[in-house]
Structures are given as C-alpha cells and as structure tokens.
Length: 254
Image (cartoon, rainbow, N blue to C red; front, side):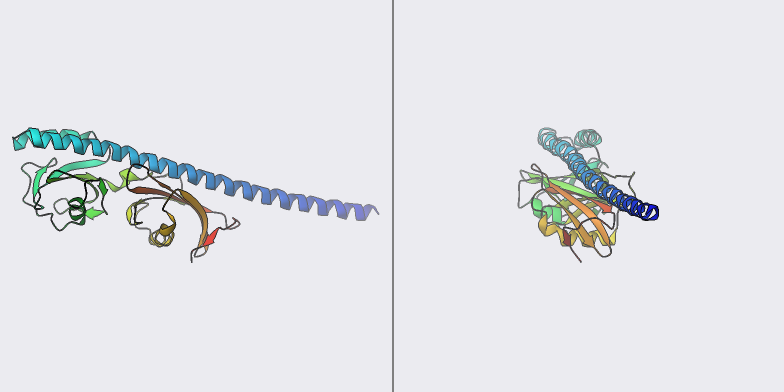
C-alpha cells in the first residue's frame, strides 16, 4: 500500500512538472510575441522620426533654392539642412530633365544624369513624398534609400542611410527589422542580406495592407512577424523574431 501511494505521488509530481514546463514555454512564447509587437512599434517610430524631419528639410530646401540665386550659398544651406536630419547624408536637387543641379555633399555639383533612376521617374508623376528602393550612389559607391519629393519643376532627394529607417535590435540574436514600401518591396533590412528573411517577407507582404501580426512556420523554424503601416508615410515597418519550436502556429508559409 505504501509502495502504491509512493508511485502515485511520483506520477502526480511528474505531471505537475510537465504542466509547469508547458506553462513556462507558453509564457515565454507570449513574452517574445509581445516583445516583437513592441519592436515593430519602435521600428515605426524610428522611421517616422526620420521621415518627418526629412520632409521638413526638403520643404526648406525648396525655399532656399527658389530664394537664393548663388550656387555656393545654396550648397552651404543644403549642407546645413542635411546635417540636422538623422540618417541623411546629403540633399540633392535634380532638374526637370534629370540633371543634377545642387549637391549638399559636394560643390560644385558633378555633371550627372539621373533621369533613368526609378525614384526620379516616380517623383515626376507625383507630388507626394516617395520612399524609393535602395540604390547605389554613382559617385559615392554607397547604398542609400532615396526619400524624394517633387516641388514645382524640381525633384529634391534626401540621400538616406538604410539603417536609419529600422531599429537595429542589436541585443537580440534572432531578431530582424525591415522597412517596406506600400507595395511590399524591401527598402531596408537589418541584419542585411538575409536571404531566407527576404523570401519570408515576400510571401507575407500581401497580408501587410494594415497593422497585423502572425506566428508563422517557415522552413523548419517558427517566427513572430509583426507589421505596422505608417498613417503618414508610404512605409510599413516589420519586426521578426524567432520563437520556440513548441509555439502554436497561425500560418505555414512554406
């Protein structure tokens, strides 16, 4: 009888331990998902902070170009503006024919035809702020995100560092931050050049028309994916975080 009671108690203890372990796993998953939501919000705020300041700088640049007739003074004022916007390396002004007119980074501006750039083509068809796809500067050789606005006959371009538009999340080893255009094209991503993440985002992007979140299985891993669409700018901020293999999955995107 004593032996039976002892065995019964052992079974209760094992069951309690299993339940406690399961509760711990659920609690961990919930915490990681909520932390991904927080990161997505921080991503959105980081991008909007840069974009608000950039649009103000572009509007100020337009006033400078229209009111100052000396190219060197325009250069000085554009350089001052660019230095005050976080993440912006330079402000350039492009003429109606695509020719570079002013460059806050260098004076005099080099002779450069930018009429074939996709961001220029989009700008001449719209008066809204445009966040272009990441490109490589023809004179600098460095990647940048063009934040562009057409004012009058001129196109103003803020040469923006890609990582200024995402939260780096450097303290997390399995976290990623992404900035997307409205149509789902990737603008910036950190860590960079992550092939599997690009594929995951491409498959998920049709769902990212408004704020949302999913726990997804991709290949052999599970991720929390949270996205927030800016109400003021054409950008979607996305945070991705790895979850335990025991996490409950909303969708399988394989």
